[in-house]
Length: 130
Image (cartoon, rainbow, N blue to C red; front, side, top):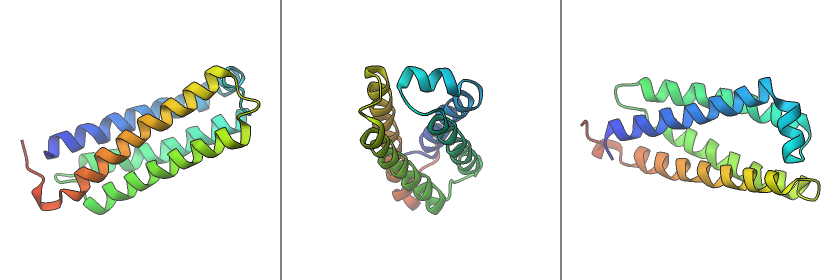
């Protein structure tokens, strides 16, 4: 994987995290109602995403992203996937159909980011500049 590709993945992940933060900050109550979740879950998710986005931008801005930092980001994303499944387990009975689809779809997307980031970090010295 090229450094440019890894940096693009990190930036795209940061952009999606920033979007979740904006939703949690600006529209928690209406989004929570649409999903059938408590508003505080949406807010907390947003703040977690802000912290993750900041780490992703730090990694993406490095000349060669630190493999340890990228692996930490990938592990954080796996934690997000686990937490998303936990949200479905805890609140699934109260969630709307849209809520279930959204939470599971974003968990799948975050899993894709985690796998790509882990692979990029694992390339280590094999990462090539393009």
